[in-house]
Length: 205
Image (cartoon, rainbow, N blue to C red; front, side):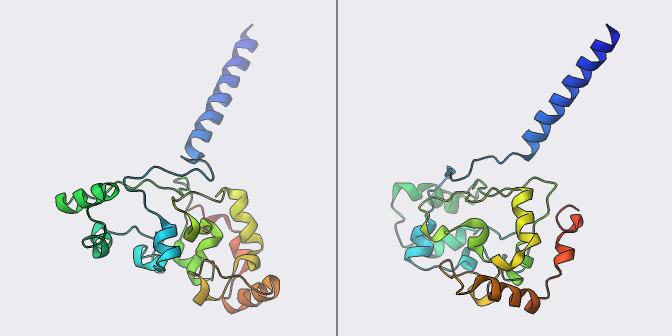
């Protein structure tokens, strides 16, 4: 009887641990699910139709671990004059007038125990579209990749297939003519150490 109680307690402990682990590592939203935002911002309109460069809004993407979010002032560069009377932009105008920033919701989010640096990926020729998909075609932003450890390791084991010349990192439509040959050449150009990419401390610090 005592052994059965111990085994039951262990089973409950293991199941509780698995549930807690899943809760800590699960994405807040599923793949290809749009995320409600205070303003329905369209990357398709701003990037695809108008041609705004990623770096205009995500100003720290080349220099910081975080890509950064645009300030209200950045949005108001245009929207102080354009469409400022539209109901969908009311939260933006209210935030500008009150000085209280908008509470944007994360679309792509990694667990707290994972370290990801945007700047090093940009410097090594990984295009925005590799992780974020064709945002220039998204009326509403959604996550297009699993962002799981296995998915990240696929690229770390063989980065050649995701590399592009630095001048094309922010070009959503860019595609190489010979992926493998160009990628292998860029591994050398960017001095990417494939063995170091598999070191646990690269992402877990």
